[in-house]
Image (tube, rainbow, N blue to C red; front, side, top):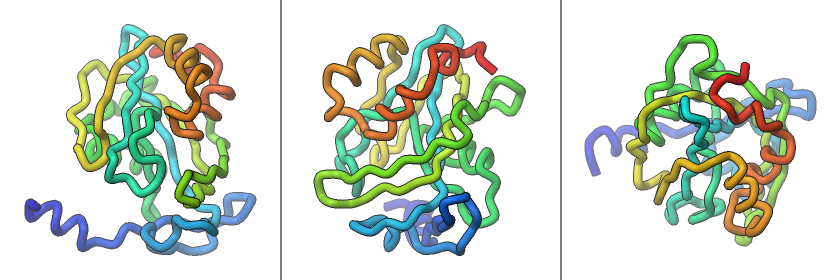
Length: 192
């Protein structure tokens, strides 16, 4: 393990607990929050699209606590206490995929700002998140952290929708739910 990785592990990641209206209730260690009785907390989800209109999908590492090995949108995460959500999206893009998201308009947009879901994985772990969904436009391939991402692929949005409909068990439940709410322009590079 590198020194940076050891230092990162030593810093306890906190999530922000919220009520049904999104009002902050406090924070708690991420490692203790996700379980069979996960409280509602803030998160975010990001879809990455290429200027050519392809969508980046990633396969979650087998080391992940929840939904290991399933395909999902590009990346997800949790804003730290006091961290603006867009800043957290940009931070996580670097950490998980090695991607620097541009700061110009159209490069990062909220496409489902009020998305919320609750899902239970096969181990009984619950995800219970108030999770705004973003779309980022990027013109480079990712260089993912293998502890986070096992595989990745660029695909056509229509092909992704067909795959999720044909084999929903192979995809994260939040991706399936987001695709039900996202219209086709939301996954195109020119939407805004």
